[in-house]
Amino acid sequence: MDIQINRAAVIGAGVMGSQIAALLANAGIITYLFELAPTKRTEHEKNLGLTLNSEIVRNRLSLKAIENLKKQKPAPLGSLESVNYIQACNLESDLSKLSEVDWIIEAVVEKLEVKKELLKKIEGLKKTSCVVSSNTSGLSIEQMVADCSDSFKERFLGIHFFNPPRYLKLVEMIPNTKTSKSMIENMRAFSEERLGKTVVIAKDSPNFIANRIGTFGLLLTVKEMLEKGLTIQEVDQLTGPLIGRPKSATFRTLDVVGIDTFAFVSDTLFSQLDEQEKELFKLPRFMEELIHSGAIGQKAGKGFYQKV
Ligand code: NAD
Image (cartoon, rainbow, N blue to C red; front, side, top):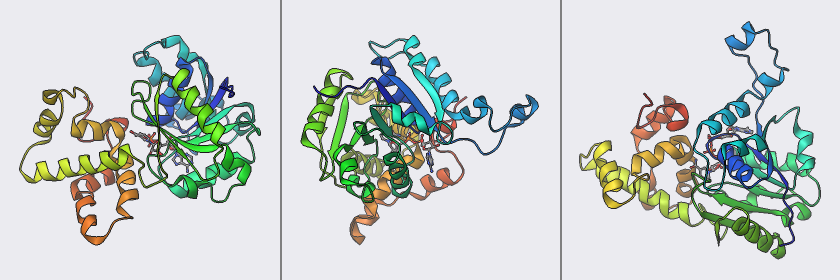
């Protein structure tokens, strides 16, 4: 394996980014966890006399994500102390840190334009040897770097971790047409040997492999079973522990994934379908209403299940 990854940056300290940072920290890699800098102070911050430039305010979101990680169980082979390998950073004043790292993983919101803009920014900041990857669930890898140079494309690929990334073994790797073959092999070896993952190489098609199947299965279950008059709890019993899937029942999975993120992912597929297929993949109205009201799942403390 030719690639040396000693330091990494994860951009986006949400559901996936924070846990990918923990996965890397568990593997002994110093990791910078980047978030957007807040534009407003909270009442508490105002009372403490902090300004928007105070580090504790600028890094509020990534610091909070790191605090949450400290409360979780350590991953196999990991330890709570390894969380100290993660440093909170923000996407304004800390950007120069991107030039220090060997691997940059973008894990921001599932919107093509946001990812394109971010990757273009990264192109001007990273060191030449740095590998860049996207954790997209299924957006086009090719389109994401359409505005970038060939040398950037050579070291760019989709590396799709599954939720929760510290525990689930599967990783999909999705090259673009310019990704260097040796880099794919190096990243595959690194993911297997250092991160303990099982890698599947996927084509750059909407939602790749697992989410293509997963989105279809979840949407169909939600629609069919609720139409048949079953409750959320009944659906989860039937699709969870009783069939040997203790943690992956339908609605619980949607809450853990994030109902908003699930909607973005199913939309990637939806836009490619013909009219008849669209009917099948349309998000049910009650899920749209949940998103509209901010009840987007575990990360918001409310979704199909409420945090009490
Ligand atoms: P999330 O909603 O928890 O977090 C999204 C992050 O993006 C937040 O940190 C937010 O501040 C940041 N963000 C939003 N707008 C931004 C902007 N304009 N610039 C920079 N950052 C911005 O989402 P998530 O579930 O962590 O998903 C992140 C990525 O991982 C997505 O591409 C998603 O498809 C993918 N993914 C998600 C899951 C899952 O189960 N949730 C699984 C695999 C892959």
